[in-house]
Length: 525
View 1 (cartoon, rainbow, N blue to C red):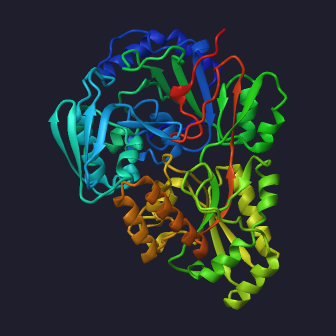
View 2: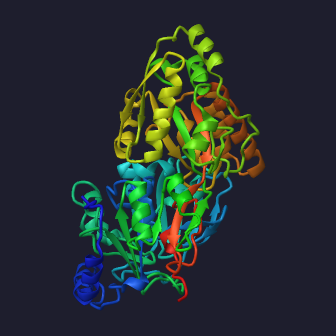
View 3: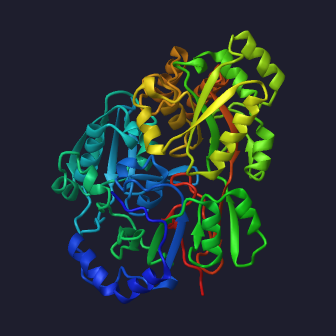
């Protein structure tokens, strides 16, 4: 397991400078790299990032877990990526669906090297996809319908699907290609999952480095797409409390801080030493109902509960007005959204509807992640709102990995789950198909099942007509809203803060929210 200590001191950084050559030599021996001091950066070329939440693994299998994805997005490459909302090639230089959308032909970029010097070929792509299919968890859910890969030569291959799936190609923007030789050599009994928790099998711009007190990644000099200005090292510190991240930032012990509470970010807005950036990605705060069992299986009860939450108060008091009240199940940054009205608080109407449903004294339970301070506040606000109409809400803390595990069986899905949801990539289909298709076990967070929705989504997956597909997605969202599958609270901006003079700017990302470390550029001195 990765160590998740909460601090990295100036002493450690001085030690890294003094022992740079030795650290680089150890890293080189372990990864087959030249024994140089290339990977031991001085402090002025190192960016320290403060972020909350446990980093349980660096296996790219878990790119669906934001803490993991933030780091590995700089260590691994994907076949395609996104430039803003437009899909573009990365490792792939050409790609095309067959007429029936049951296969994809791909031409791979030549000359790409893994961090151990091995050439990246079509065989590594096939191994990556086959491994995900065998394991069946994490981002494997994004490649539903994957059958096999036919390798023609080192740079040409065809991905074969068991069914038409126009969502497959954009999903590849979250499938990080692994070094097949390294993973196979360390496969063990779990397809290399234990080994990849803390080892590197990537080809990205950064190499996984020291992990003794924090997670460190170091610039890879052999990267196929070098760009001037990248930090030589990036250090990721786990700091769960927003106030502590703020204080460490102001003290100069952290250069960039993600996930700050709005009040902490607002308090630094006039400080000339830092710059506050309200990053608008695809985050939306939601309460997901278990629509399969318990009190929330009744759509009447779900509709009533949607009218209880104080949307305006939560957005203003907890989020510092950094966002907008939601008007539908999908974040506003995505396309293909119908113009639905936002739900408003109406306690009297909610109380009457609960009485009609025979649930005036229902006992409810909601899970939330206590590691995030804003969630604690929102959970408490909802609990208070329900108490106003005589309903008691039990709050149950849960760690996100445990929540993900609970989705494997409809019987263990929490009655209600408060979370910030986001699109894995900029396409409405990824949230709709993975979140609400009845056979999407493991990602269908509501246990939702509706034959009409299934039919519409199947049709969308099989059509190459973008306009028609968009219309189908809009129809699905209208049904989800009518069925009250969730309390769609508000789309939120994610305040990020950086010290002036450390990096040039913060660029928002919808692939590794809120920002990709590989996009960091050192400020010109």
